[in-house]
Length: 122
Image 1 (cartoon, helix red, strand yellow):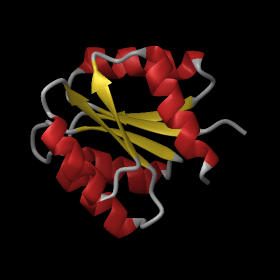
Image 2: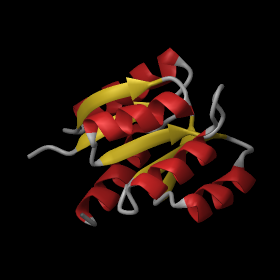
Image 3: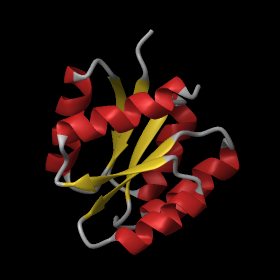
């Protein structure tokens, strides 16, 4: 059975780029969201195996969304996505419950490696 992923990023081209990497890597993208509030709703609705969450988004940022998702499901597997220069936020993301982080612009091998690593931890 393939690993089901929810992609959350406010930039549609980033979602598309990530989706292409994941699909080529054998993952199933079950949904997308463009802000943290929608991420929480989609998580509850779709119950994905893994969520990729952008840190900087409108309405509700990735850190806040991660905390809410973890509150709803303590076993949630979240990978934070951040642009270069947001390393301080990465520490906050891990504290919020994220299992890993990937840096933008995405590098296919690193993305697949991060998802495979936490999908094995099921």
